[in-house]
Length: 94
Length: 144
Image 1: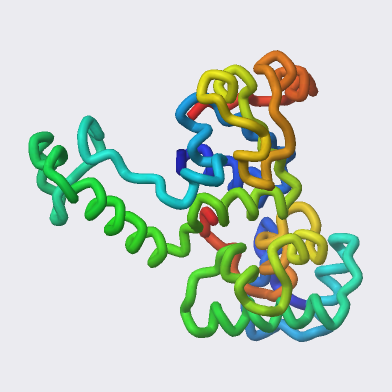
Image 2: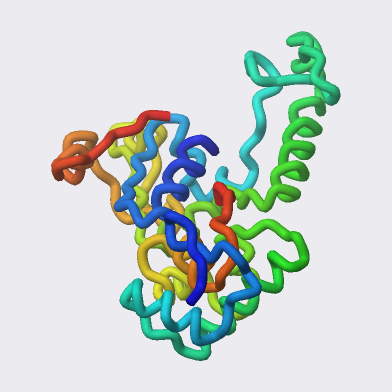
């Protein structure tokens, strides 16, 4: 069991595991591949370093380009990916 | 210009269907020749401030080199905040499924051809054709 807030974001980032990620993804009708996990790792590392998250930074990560990011996490990719990555909803405008 | 790009890209990021229509001077943002060298107006720009926040004297804005300097400073500040350049913004919007259109009347007026425009531009439309694309229920039209 993990604690989530009203919007489904993890309350405690330490409760995150790959299995938790897969479960949140499934609730959002998404099956995670290695590529998804690479992106999730990237987002978690960036947040751990205290850096802001933007779609642009994902596009420059070398893992996926921006189009690929939208394909991996359809709809609102940054919101969805951070939810699955067990990190806070980003406050970024870009 | 940036207001439109930030709002359009922000909508795309939220998974909202987004179409942007560029007209008149806005065409500079999607014209290959101009889009990478847009300037911040140093005259008649009510948001202009000196570093530190004091008002920017209008007469200072007309001096040679001031506009270039101001524009350079803006670009540096924007890069710090991870704000994309105009061409990159257009790519981000289309990468997320947003669509970019140019105004036919303004194109005629400035004697521009479709080939003068960024490859991200989907089509050249009349304002009526653009509004037809906006006919769905719940559509909102935002002017910036």
